Length: 215
Image (cartoon, rainbow, N blue to C red; front, side):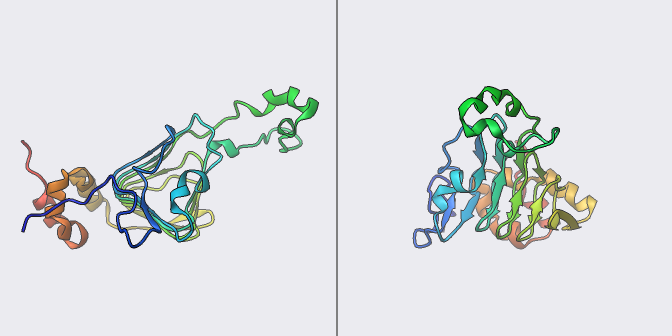
């Protein structure tokens, strides 16, 4: 029986579970990039991910999420538009209130930001995790439920807490290097489909043996 890759272009990969959506075919903002098969799970309205889960996103900073990421219910990305001035006596954004206060709009524009928020491939976000602006999360990382991620997360790191701290790495340094080199998330869809069991439950040796041969 031939192996048939899943379809990365459908919004609901499981038609009877509308709480799960693939994000790549769903997002429309040019400031958000999502890789194939990364999904969001929410019983309320997962299709509203752009407006409910990516907050204060006025640009120019981008949100980049890799392939094969799993986002649990209530995961939020706080973007740089949430910044307030902190160098004066008050942090209150008076100019947005209207009236003659708008004459001072220059006081709240061009605030320093931390740049793009970038998530690697194969990252698992637990329930109601929050990611702060400019964070970079490595491949294969796990973000525990309720975490507030304020600093970068290494490849295959497990973090948790508020602020999130590194609990441990899923593999040692040598094995992480081998996993990054094999980069299964970049395999052609047909080849990946033929080796799903190895990707999910095999050893690193088996994963390397299953990798596509160079042409």
